[in-house]
Image 1 (cartoon, rainbow, N blue to C red):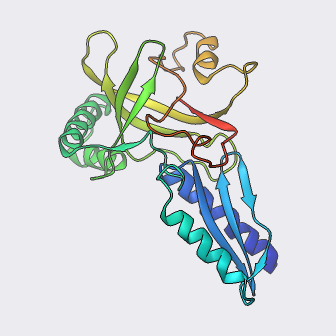
Image 2 (cartoon, rainbow, N blue to C red; image 1 turned 90 degrees about the vertical axis):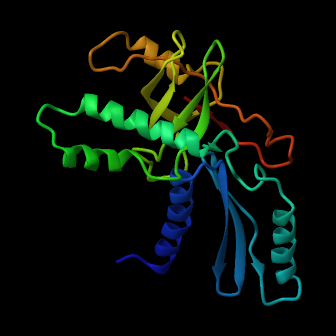
Length: 239
């Protein structure tokens, strides 16, 4: 049986992990209350920052809460932890993505697959109003890409946070829309370490390895976390 401390620790790690895995976020704020004592937590892929405990029953205690909420109210989306490299797709883009996924599934399904089989598979990859638009950065230019809910999500918040998406984007050569698999991961920023694309290229050509179309680090267009005064992440998103 788990002790009360172990259950509390499990909740402290599980809730941010779920938010970071299923939402487009760079970090998550949360509160921890243990009796009269409270802490403010900021969890990201590089770890969790925890404030000193303060007593909410004292005269000064509630002031910490109010001051944090006041600052949070005036914070930018980036300072609140939203990943600005993910944008909501328009209705027209959602409809276009739906048609592309449906056409691709019909080609990929095994012979003899029924309409019910196709519908079940389609339901796994498409959920209305969850389509987002991201940019995949390669060596030439950013490629606007439509993605759906991730096919897989990590069970932890610290680390690479790798997720996989059904994606649709224009080809780099003929500008024709195609379906792809997009790997989204946070990598350690170090000149001595190769990028995800470089690792993939080193594996060589194999029937078990998908063909690499584009790769590069992801940068939001209108945010700089360090400039905005938020603790900078030690990890950087890569695709």
